[in-house]
Length: 286
Ligand code: ZN
Image (cartoon, rainbow, N blue to C red; front, side, top):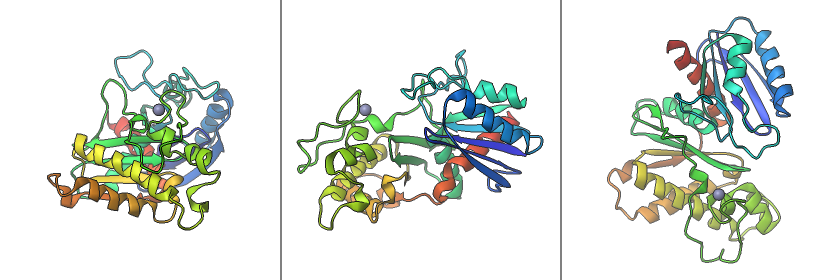
């Protein structure tokens, strides 16, 4: 059996299965302080029988540098209590198994890439929710440089009808996350996109920022597909508007642009946990 953890800021999704595409049991726990949360997760796995490996897709920032003494740590997160948490080391010791570790969004990108089947060409996964994050699979592998991408913190061009809002990112103010995350939407309009009245420009403004991000991703990485998940992306028609707007930005320029796809997750809410099980399968082989 493989074990997987999708470690999020509000909940941990736990699963076991004989292979990543076959989840035999799953369980969700609330994210509290690290000691309580990790012990509860570990107890659940201990009750499921022997595991051969565990994969963790985690909220970040995380240390993914295998040469670092802090590989497998959640690093300087503002989430109270979680900075410098050795999450991979904890489970490696508690469960006595090899641990695969990556960001939650790289895990989701791995799973969506596998679900896309033979249609390769690279895939990026964006989550638009309380925060904005992104992961990528190129040449079959999740993308790491010295750390992991922080796609949520690029600077989009301001929409003509959105010049006044200062932005909510504590570090960059009007980066993508500061303009298009759930809290940024709430701060401007007092409700979610789905609750805006008909004809309100909010959805078009947010779609424009995400489309600019897709344009940047196509330009910088030449991925074929961009998958958009997260709570904000559930707003009716949003992802379709993003796809239309990104095509306008492309203006027929990108090589391979006719093959570009901007879509909702094929795996729905299971992308992250399926990717965590894929990290486990890779750790078992390593
Ligand atoms: Zn930022």
